[in-house]
Structure formats: structure tokens, C-alpha cells
Image (cartoon, rainbow over all chains, first blue to last red):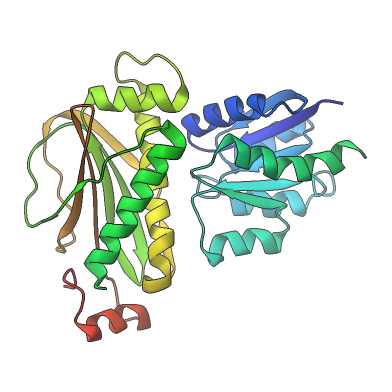
Length: 129
Length: 176
């Protein structure tokens, strides 16, 4: 079964890099949706179901922490695993994300192997449901 | 180790790590200096990012349009003959990653720091001036004949425990 993934980042450069990296992982991926901030992501999720969200933390309009909180509070979307992809490495924002239920985080700059390793353990259980 | 040296080391490590990981480029060690007063006029691209917390300041990355296009081409693996939205976005993201990584490495000494969203300026013969009065720590890298400059200034924003401990120790040349 192929997975659908949502990439949320205000940087078009990072969205393009993640598109390429995700395709290079060899994982069975059908569609990679993109959103520029949390608000756009929530709008997109109303029309498209996804198996995983990769989200930046620092974004305008609605940041990744607010997006994560909204997803975990939603009866429709609370089970979607959310992986934070961020420059933040301190205990503050990453710790907040983990407390809110983030499935994990990858720190920027990242390699394709780091993304693959992180997602393999998260996507496989979801796809086997 | 004084704070200036710590900042130099953090900036050096983060710049070289980001270039290696995201662009596959191994930068030679940069030339380090401290910049006082009014900076020189700029031509090309400058990207700024703000840091705030017990210490506050600004980080920047600047380079020529040609170097910015090369960065974008390597980062996004696409042909980029001239400066466009992709180039500005790539430089902004590079700034975010370099200063963000340095921020993470400085936080154990300076306390939690917030990072703003980067702003990129592209033009000719323009000057930039920060409202802060601290000295800038400057790293100049030469890459295939072009110069990439990474700068950071930080100063205590309030008499928080983190800021006071550095000021009392009198080991930080950039205290103001």
C-alpha cells in the first residue's frame, strides 16, 4: 500500500528538498502534498487524507506547534503521526512538540538517510493498520 | 573560553556542517574578524535572522548573486541561471539552518533563544544598520573564488541570570 504524506514548511526550498528526499528513500509513496504553514495544512487536510505529516516549527500565520495541537485535538486527525523537521534543537519547542504528541523530530540540516530512518519506524505501523 | 571564541566556534561548526550536509560542499575554515561601527556598502544578497531571549541580536549571511545561484542549484538540484524566488528562498533557508544550529549550540551558555523568520534583501549599493550597538563577529569563507560572509552579534537584552553571569565574569568581549 502506498502512503500519502503532507509536508508543511514556509520555505519552498525545504518543501522541494523533502519532496526529492522522500522520493529517494524508496518508500512506497503515492502523493506528497505541500502546505506553507499550519493554516494551509488544515485546509488541505479537509480535502485530502494523509498517513503522515512532516512539519516545520517556526512558520508565519500558524506555526508547527499550533498545527500539532490542532491535529491532536481533532477527532478526525488525531491519529496522524506528525514528525517535526526543524532547526530547533533546544528543550523548549521540541519538548513542547513531544508533549503534544509529536511522533518524532528531525533536525535541520538533515540527510536523506536521517529522514528515511525516522519515517520507516513511524510509517510502517501506520500502513499496516 | 570567552564568549566571542564560543560564538566563533559555533558559527564555524554550523556553517561547515550545513554546507556539507545540504550542499555536499566542504568549506575551508573561514577568516574570522570583529566588525565595529558602520558596515561597508553591499552588492548582492543579504539574509537576516533575529535572535531573542536573555541575549538578543541578529545573524546574517551575504554573498554575490552568482554564489547565491550556485547555492540554490546545489541545494535544490536545479539549474538556476539568475536570481529568482527559489534563490532567495534557498539563501533564507540556509541562513535559518546556519544561525539556528549556532543558536542551539549557544543555548547551554546563553539560555533559551528564539529565532525569527529570515528576511532576504537583493540589490546593489545598499547599506544595512542594526539598532544594536554590539560588535559583529564575522566569518568570511572563500568558495571557488567567491566570498560568503556569515555574521552574528549578540548582546544581553536584560539582567537575566544568563546575561549577568557572563557580564560578571568579564570574559566576553562583546558585552555592551
